[in-house]
Length: 110
Image (cartoon, rainbow, N blue to C red; front, side, top):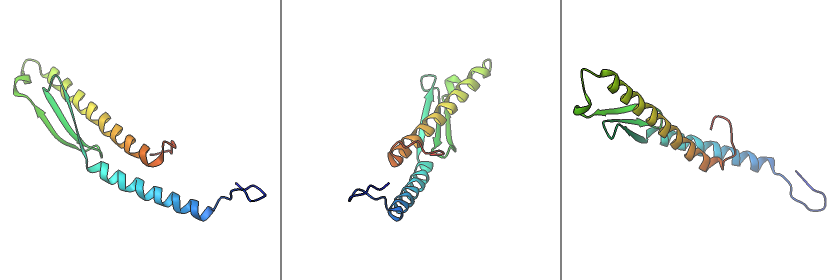
């Protein structure tokens, strides 16, 4: 964008450098977040799931008192709920970190 009479001029080279710097920062943050671990707990701490920002499940802890051979479905539901909550936390962590870099520009895939 340029204006006549000494106005601002857009420098394509500078803009390209800024985009490349942002891209490098996004990649750095993605790699960093993929290694971070978030934990979700459900059922008053009966089931706890730890997952990385890269959505790799790192651990599941089940309190022994929640294991009831007569009610396996409840345990399955608790594990499922904990995994889904952990995934949501990991995605939110990634989105928050990316928003800090992109300035909330709403770039696709970020």
